[in-house]
Image (tube, rainbow, N blue to C red; front, side, top):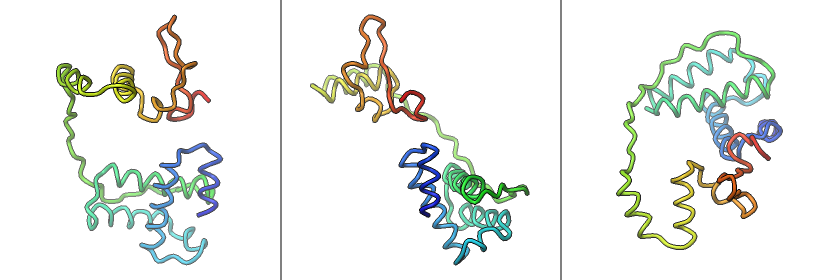
Amino acid sequence: MGEVRAVLRRLHYSIHTERAYCDWIKRYVLYHKMTGRAELLQGSEAKIEAFLTHLAVDSNVASSTQNQAMNALVFLYKKVLKQPLSEEINDTRAARKANVPVVLARQEVASILALMDGTPQLVAKVLYGSGLRIMEAVRLRVQDIDYEYKQLTVRSGKGRKID
């Protein structure tokens, strides 16, 4: 797991992704009762397929959860073990839920913002008006605001596009 963490950090993955991937890899290893690195390399596609099918059928996970587990395992084999998966993985896919987004009306947002004051209200207005993520808004500094051009500079955003 130390090697997995080292590769994730070298490639600048977020700490949340690191935790999630490490958790999925642990669950995968425990599911197959693997004891050594050699067991990871034997019949990898079939083992991944069995694990993902188990998640969909027995654990009844959402499709996005199953996809995250798949991404963690592909990362393990491709980036850490340096053994790309050559065969297709034909696992049973979890049923996709049709999510209808719930969006507040402008009046509802205005009434919520009216109940807030001070810094929390300012942060909520910035989040609502700009579409920033919470951590992006919390990390903003005074010098990140350009009043003349009416723009914000987001540092350490998702994907670390600007450092």
